[in-house]
Each structure stands twice: as C-alpha cells, then as structure tokens.
Image (cartoon, rainbow, N blue to C red):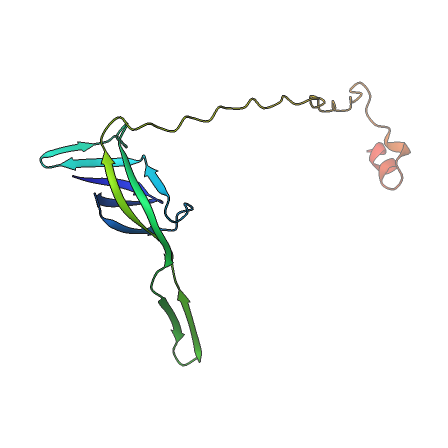
Length: 154
C-alpha cells in the first residue's frame, strides 16, 4: 500500500516503514505527527484518487531527527571584471518514518470556533458637505485688484 501525501508544501509518495526527508517541521523529535492531506491511495489494483484530498484518509509518521542537508555551493562570476561571489546553503530538514496509512475513519481535528469580533464602538462621522455656492449673483470683478477692473469693462 502506498499513498501520495502533501507534507510541508511538497507531495511525497510514501509507504509504511519508509524514511523520508522533508522540510523542517515544528514537531519535536520522537513525537508522532499526522498528515490529513492525502491526495491518492494505492493498494494493489485499487487506486483511490481524492478531489483534491481523500476524506478520512490519514498518514501517521514519527519524527526521527532534525538535521541539515548537504551544502550547496552557489558560485557567481563575471568574466574580465574580477567579480566572484561564493555562497553556501544548507537546507533545514526533518527525517520522518511512516508508521501507517489509514484509508478511512481518521478523526479530523475539531474546527476552531469562530470568535465574534466586537462591533466598532463609534461609527465614523459622515463626510462634511461641500460648501454651498450662491448661484444667483456673479462675482464683482471691480473689487479684485490687478486685471479685475479691466475684465469688468470688457
């Protein structure tokens, strides 16, 4: 029996008693961890495909140890310029061993109860109305300094 399960954002094909290196999990060493996002289960000729996941299916595993992967060297160079940069990277990994694959009857974690948000105490004030303009009379251009009196004559 095998299963395709999503663990830490990646998909893995796993079987019972298989050791797998996955991206670092927050679970402590020696603790058990369950993965509910099972995408496919194969048992001989019987293949069950989820849409997208199989309801009630679960893969249980045990965390063996946390470790770092092999060093990957990143070397950058530009010819004739004397530019050379050398960097290294070691990925944080977790080694797990698959203890079992459950096809149905797995208990899902209880959904968290939604807490009601407190309503705002004071409502926002309405935006200020635009100042009303007197539409009946035109401006008296004679009172404006500069070009106002000349414009009034025209």
